[in-house]
Length: 140
Image 1 (cartoon, helix red, strand yellow):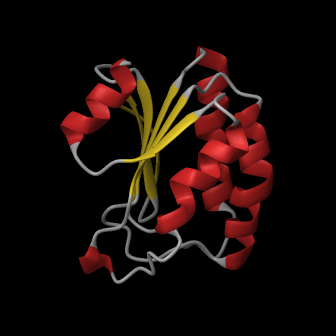
Image 2: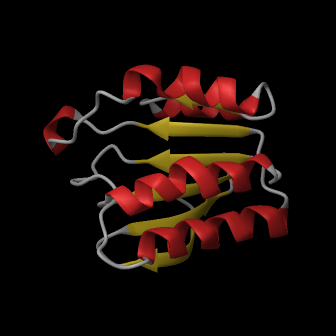
Image 3: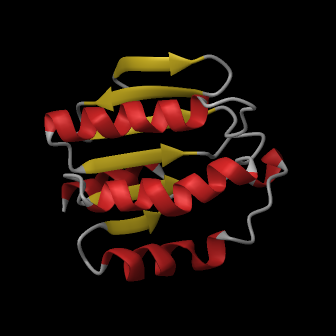
C-alpha cells in the first residue's frame, strides 16, 4: 500500500488505487473538516468504485487525529451506507484508530457486527489492523 494516487484533500485524506489489493484505499490524516470535503472525498471514491466496478474498499483511520463532525457522521451512517449497498463493493476493511490518536474508540466494539447485519452478506466488513490480514481478507 498505497499505489496510484487518485485524489488528495490536503490535511484530510488521500485516495489511492492499490493494484495489489485491487482496492480503493482511503488514508485519513483527520476525519474532521468544517466544510464539505469529507463528503466530497468519499463521494469521489464511491464514484471511482462504481465506474471501475471495484469490489474492495480499505479505510485507514489508524493515524487520524480527529473524528468526524456530527453532520458527517450522520451522512456516513445514512446516505453513504445506502450508497455502498447499491455499489459494486463486496468487501470493506477498516483500520481503526491507534491508541496514540486520542480518538474515542468505543464505537469499534460493535462496528463489525453492525456492518455485517446491515449488509446481510452483501458486503463483508472487517476491522483489520495488519497489512497481511488485509491482503488475506481481500484475496478470498
